[in-house]
Amino acid sequence: GGIGIVNNPRARRNRSRPALARRLRAQLGDEGEVIDASTPDDLARAIERFRAAEVDVVAVNGGDGTGHFVLTALARTFGDDPLPKLLLLRGGSMNTVARGHGIRGGPERILADVLAARRRGFPLRTEACDALRISADDGAEPRYGFIFGTGAVVTFLERYNKSPRTSPLRAALLVARGVCSALVGGPFAEALARREPLRVATDGDDWDDASYLAVAAGSTPDAGFGFHAFHRCGEQPGFFHAVGVTGSLGQLALSLPRLRRGRP
Image (cartoon, rainbow, N blue to C red; front, top):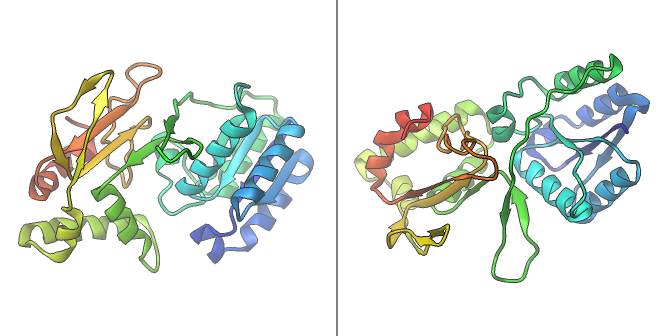
């Protein structure tokens, strides 16, 4: 048993607080191990080490991107064997998946709560969540995660990640900028409005042919920045919620209040 923590030193927030990994190691003591993983090879070795140690919890000190890589490495290493519990320490700037499952606080607070429960012999609060398996046609191994997006989703995140400092406030300001740009036909809106001709099929049924602003899917309700675009993902085990955006950018902007509340 024990807790294995994957620390991503390259995560933006970890670069600004390099002492955090040392504090997590001190906090964990002999109840587990913290391993730095800066590359996919480092991560693969860390997961192999955790499997050999038979840890029952793998924690992630990084953002949503780090969580996606850790989940993929776990799936590749464990194969058909049950995975250890995944603990998201909210070490990123967005922490979308953690927020969607009610995880609050910072890395040290979250770890302290888990350690306190384990030391008292209390069961950990867990929630089952289906993962998405994403495969490409180029023969690469599949990747695993909880949110997938194309088109405007990618454009928005690329612009967000170029910000000198990422934060929920910065995200809100960028959303507001996108709305204003859509209203006046500005260059940011033009970048978001590039359309992709895609063929989409679900359960054997083709969606109507269209050029999409975005196609997104999720097995956790929060699509990022507090927008509950995937509000139906938990209706049945083994399912996820997919959304195709075919309207104009202006129509999408007018729909944002409903998207935030998780309404159709």
